[in-house]
Image (cartoon, rainbow, N blue to C red; front, top):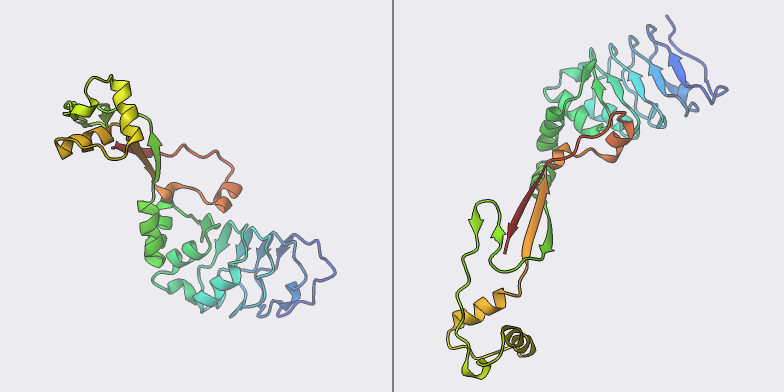
Length: 246
């Protein structure tokens, strides 16, 4: 039946605090308790937590269910600095009736793994990203890495297409009589050699090109720094799609 609690500043190393099942409306008594890791505030009469909890950066478990919190944006903004927060309960508050409530919390509090007694799934994270940041979702799906790959002309490119056998270019008379290596040395020494057919010049130049190899992954399945730090299990290897072309 407590309606208020005196300041707990004399307990700066306090880590666990249960004050659920009371009638508390103000959290000013927590202003100096920076070491809190578990805080149980469920079943009280809280209407607003703005400015009361944002300093609790070490908090891992927070129960706020069955209160009178109405403003979803202000409540989530107060919790954004809790980079270690893993378990959060907000159900049985007026804000929980917002149509996009769960996805909103998942997107803006990415460290939360258990929300309202239900595990946050990868599908929900993807849906939240598409809903609140479609541009970033598109970029993450389209980004890839490219690099040069040494390969000779005529090598297989990709899984279904192969380079056609190179036809022999018609060299100008000035180059006849030289060996293949000498011809290539001359071509490298002179930028413009008068070929009888322009296509032959293109073909000779193509022999000096390398393959381009692009690899892409599904970035929605790549764990963030916070998720890697909080997860206890080893990460599964990512599936990578690699495409080669000249």
